[in-house]
Image (cartoon, rainbow, N blue to C red; front, top):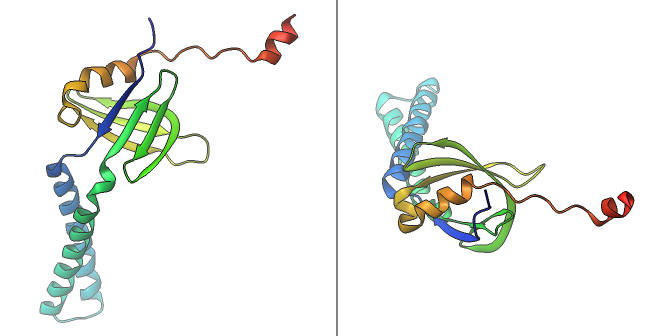
Length: 156
Protein backbone atom coordinates (compact mmCIF):
# COMPACT_ATOMS: atom_id res chain seq x y z
CA UNK A 1 0.00 0.00 0.00
CA UNK A 2 1.45 3.36 -0.97
CA UNK A 3 1.29 6.68 0.86
CA UNK A 4 -1.29 9.30 -0.08
CA UNK A 5 -0.13 12.14 -2.35
CA UNK A 6 0.46 15.61 -0.97
CA UNK A 7 -2.73 17.55 -0.24
CA UNK A 8 -3.98 20.56 1.70
CA UNK A 9 -7.28 20.93 3.57
CA UNK A 10 -8.97 23.91 5.20
CA UNK A 11 -10.87 22.88 8.31
CA UNK A 12 -13.46 25.43 9.35
CA UNK A 13 -15.90 24.74 12.12
CA UNK A 14 -19.59 25.01 11.41
CA UNK A 15 -21.51 27.83 13.03
CA UNK A 16 -24.11 25.67 14.82
CA UNK A 17 -21.65 23.53 16.85
CA UNK A 18 -19.69 26.68 17.78
CA UNK A 19 -22.90 28.34 18.97
CA UNK A 20 -23.82 25.27 21.05
CA UNK A 21 -20.33 25.09 22.59
CA UNK A 22 -20.44 28.81 23.39
CA UNK A 23 -23.93 28.47 24.92
CA UNK A 24 -22.84 25.55 27.13
CA UNK A 25 -19.78 27.49 28.32
CA UNK A 26 -21.94 30.57 28.95
CA UNK A 27 -24.45 28.55 30.99
CA UNK A 28 -21.66 27.03 33.06
CA UNK A 29 -20.11 30.44 33.76
CA UNK A 30 -23.54 31.90 34.50
CA UNK A 31 -24.24 29.12 37.00
CA UNK A 32 -20.92 29.63 38.76
CA UNK A 33 -21.49 33.40 38.81
CA UNK A 34 -24.97 32.93 40.32
CA UNK A 35 -23.58 30.60 42.98
CA UNK A 36 -20.76 33.04 43.81
CA UNK A 37 -23.20 35.96 43.98
CA UNK A 38 -25.43 34.01 46.40
CA UNK A 39 -22.40 33.10 48.54
CA UNK A 40 -21.56 36.80 48.79
CA UNK A 41 -25.12 37.30 50.09
CA UNK A 42 -26.18 39.55 47.23
CA UNK A 43 -29.92 40.09 46.82
CA UNK A 44 -31.67 37.63 44.46
CA UNK A 45 -32.24 40.25 41.76
CA UNK A 46 -28.60 41.28 41.74
CA UNK A 47 -27.48 37.63 41.68
CA UNK A 48 -29.50 37.09 38.51
CA UNK A 49 -28.03 40.21 36.91
CA UNK A 50 -24.47 39.07 37.74
CA UNK A 51 -25.13 35.57 36.37
CA UNK A 52 -26.70 36.84 33.14
CA UNK A 53 -23.96 39.42 32.60
CA UNK A 54 -21.22 36.82 33.10
CA UNK A 55 -22.94 34.36 30.75
CA UNK A 56 -23.46 36.98 28.03
CA UNK A 57 -19.86 38.14 28.30
CA UNK A 58 -18.48 34.60 27.89
CA UNK A 59 -20.89 33.86 25.03
CA UNK A 60 -19.89 37.06 23.21
CA UNK A 61 -16.17 36.42 23.67
CA UNK A 62 -16.47 32.89 22.33
CA UNK A 63 -18.57 33.87 19.33
CA UNK A 64 -16.32 36.80 18.38
CA UNK A 65 -13.23 34.60 18.63
CA UNK A 66 -14.46 31.98 16.12
CA UNK A 67 -11.91 32.83 13.42
CA UNK A 68 -9.26 30.84 15.27
CA UNK A 69 -11.31 27.73 14.61
CA UNK A 70 -10.28 27.77 10.94
CA UNK A 71 -7.14 25.75 10.30
CA UNK A 72 -4.99 24.73 7.37
CA UNK A 73 -3.98 21.07 7.50
CA UNK A 74 -1.38 19.97 4.95
CA UNK A 75 -0.01 16.53 4.17
CA UNK A 76 3.28 16.72 2.22
CA UNK A 77 3.58 12.99 1.61
CA UNK A 78 5.77 12.45 4.68
CA UNK A 79 4.35 14.52 7.56
CA UNK A 80 1.36 16.62 8.57
CA UNK A 81 1.59 20.40 8.98
CA UNK A 82 -0.89 22.61 10.84
CA UNK A 83 -1.28 26.38 10.43
CA UNK A 84 -3.78 29.08 11.27
CA UNK A 85 -4.87 31.53 8.55
CA UNK A 86 -3.64 34.56 10.54
CA UNK A 87 -0.18 32.99 11.06
CA UNK A 88 1.37 31.37 7.98
CA UNK A 89 3.93 29.49 10.10
CA UNK A 90 3.30 25.76 9.79
CA UNK A 91 3.89 23.34 12.62
CA UNK A 92 4.91 19.81 11.58
CA UNK A 93 3.54 16.90 13.55
CA UNK A 94 1.68 13.63 13.70
CA UNK A 95 -2.06 13.36 13.01
CA UNK A 96 -4.06 10.60 14.66
CA UNK A 97 -7.68 9.61 14.11
CA UNK A 98 -9.34 9.30 17.53
CA UNK A 99 -13.01 8.93 16.52
CA UNK A 100 -14.35 8.21 13.03
CA UNK A 101 -18.12 8.35 12.56
CA UNK A 102 -18.09 8.39 8.75
CA UNK A 103 -19.06 11.99 7.97
CA UNK A 104 -17.23 13.32 11.05
CA UNK A 105 -13.80 12.65 12.56
CA UNK A 106 -12.10 13.75 15.76
CA UNK A 107 -8.38 14.14 15.10
CA UNK A 108 -5.45 14.80 17.40
CA UNK A 109 -2.42 16.72 16.14
CA UNK A 110 0.80 16.14 18.10
CA UNK A 111 3.61 18.57 17.30
CA UNK A 112 6.19 16.66 19.31
CA UNK A 113 7.48 16.38 22.86
CA UNK A 114 6.67 19.34 25.06
CA UNK A 115 4.03 20.73 22.70
CA UNK A 116 0.38 20.40 23.71
CA UNK A 117 -1.86 18.22 21.54
CA UNK A 118 -4.42 20.03 19.42
CA UNK A 119 -7.83 18.48 18.92
CA UNK A 120 -9.39 18.98 15.50
CA UNK A 121 -12.92 18.36 14.36
CA UNK A 122 -13.26 17.47 10.69
CA UNK A 123 -16.63 16.98 9.04
CA UNK A 124 -17.68 16.24 5.53
CA UNK A 125 -19.35 19.64 5.10
CA UNK A 126 -16.16 21.52 6.00
CA UNK A 127 -14.05 20.06 3.17
CA UNK A 128 -16.91 19.07 0.81
CA UNK A 129 -15.32 17.72 -2.39
CA UNK A 130 -12.04 16.84 -0.63
CA UNK A 131 -13.50 14.64 2.12
CA UNK A 132 -12.43 11.39 0.43
CA UNK A 133 -8.90 12.74 -0.08
CA UNK A 134 -8.67 13.72 3.60
CA UNK A 135 -9.84 10.28 4.71
CA UNK A 136 -7.32 8.61 2.39
CA UNK A 137 -4.50 10.81 3.72
CA UNK A 138 -5.23 10.21 7.41
CA UNK A 139 -5.47 6.45 6.93
CA UNK A 140 -2.65 5.95 4.41
CA UNK A 141 0.56 4.34 5.64
CA UNK A 142 3.44 6.64 6.42
CA UNK A 143 6.47 6.27 4.15
CA UNK A 144 9.37 4.39 5.65
CA UNK A 145 12.08 6.62 7.07
CA UNK A 146 15.25 6.65 5.01
CA UNK A 147 18.19 5.23 6.88
CA UNK A 148 20.73 7.68 8.22
CA UNK A 149 23.98 7.92 6.25
CA UNK A 150 26.03 7.16 9.37
CA UNK A 151 24.12 3.93 9.89
CA UNK A 152 24.83 2.91 6.28
CA UNK A 153 28.54 3.66 6.70
CA UNK A 154 28.71 1.66 9.94
CA UNK A 155 27.22 -1.34 8.15
CA UNK A 156 30.03 -1.31 5.53
